[in-house]
Image (cartoon, rainbow, N blue to C red; front, side):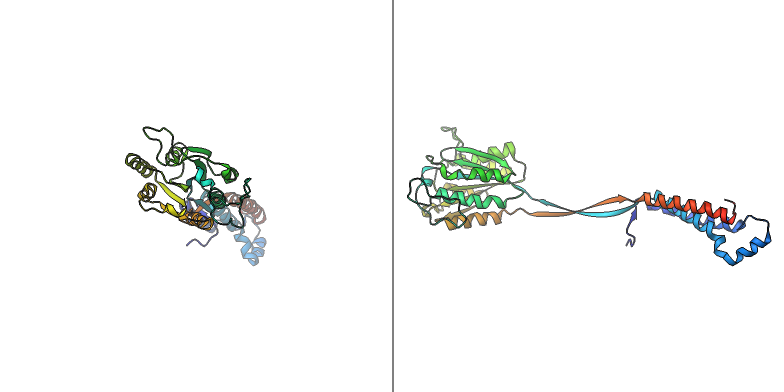
Length: 332
């Protein structure tokens, strides 16, 4: 284990010191300590034995500092890097006519809902869908989220983006729509209009970046899916690694033979049935936990060069060494 606060990039060069220092020692042993002819000076120096060794000590330090700088000393610095396993999420909200009627209970305390202009005060499925989306989106930091609307065809409200404020801004428009029928399977041979599933597949194909792809559909309707389109959409979902979650609104939606339910189960997704606003919010919270982004923590070690400190020390020792030669009159 390295007990020093630094390490060397080229530690093998430190072996040079094992050769140089013995040579410096031999040179000191074979050379007189003081280059002077008067015996009286030699006599006085005996009381300062260390002074005679000073040039050798300083020169040894100089050589060690130079060898150390050539071995490139560095200080390891660890940096923690956090990355998220991002997802490409498409929110597809049913805006068909049935979503604009009925009452699904009371709005939550932090609702964005306001009584409609008709004055009937009904908290409609479309209002609850808007509140659920507004609560779900802020928790998807790090993910890319897109917002679609659909009735008998899909409409792009906003493409996938990591700027969630833009999605929230457009989600505030959900309650204003009042569309027509419901189309899950499009396009077909007789109808070229795309439904929400095909729209999500096309969007992922054109703009997808993440490995994990999730389609969340909010709908109160049922619509047929032909066997041909069922297999085509299932194969396409498998190919892109896509997963579907469907939040079905209404008590009559939980039919186990529902074509969309079978498709969701086929691609490894999950269906939720919600009869009121509370269950809708709970379903979105469950989806949020099922698709929670995993945070990966990686430690990256970088190295900061400190060889210049060794060079400075070498220069200082060299100057002191030359000064010691003047003091002791030793021959360099």
